[in-house]
Length: 161
Ligand SMILES: Cc1cc2nc3c(=O)[nH]c(=O)nc-3n(C[C@H](O)[C@H](O)[C@H](O)COP(=O)(O)O)c2cc1C
Image (cartoon, rainbow, N blue to C red; front, side, top):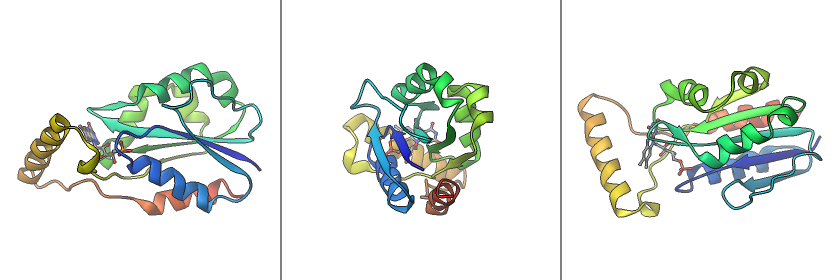
């Protein structure tokens, strides 16, 4: 089996997750950054895993566009979908808001990879927004984003059979 992983990452967390996933997958695997490659050809791959991260409730446009333009082809592949976010209880809602029902129900596995605030990669206003979010979250007794590497492992296991 050969696999293509297509991802988008704003601050680097999701990029690292896809590399971890690629390292754990058996067979030939390539990783594509959807923000750096406009024409994505998935025809030669049996398995496709794609996803991105959430900012103010939205997945990256490069990922929603990829899903939309390749929908017919994706419905013929073994498919995995992932999302990185701070609020893991909402991960399915983020995906439902951004991707078609057919793709979500066709996927063999949908996982939340958790999240991380990488402030060193954020612009000034983004850092300020995150500081406000962190404070509000703290007051509500909420948790900061946490990595969920166990779900990367689950994805790797599902796509290594
Ligand atoms: C400005 C900003 C807005 C965010 N908005 C949300 C959000 O609406 N919901 C959520 O669950 N996580 C949110 N997050 C958390 C990110 O999804 C999380 O930090 C993720 O790991 C980012 O991955 P990336 O580094 O690959 O972009 C936000 C993060 C930032 C910096």
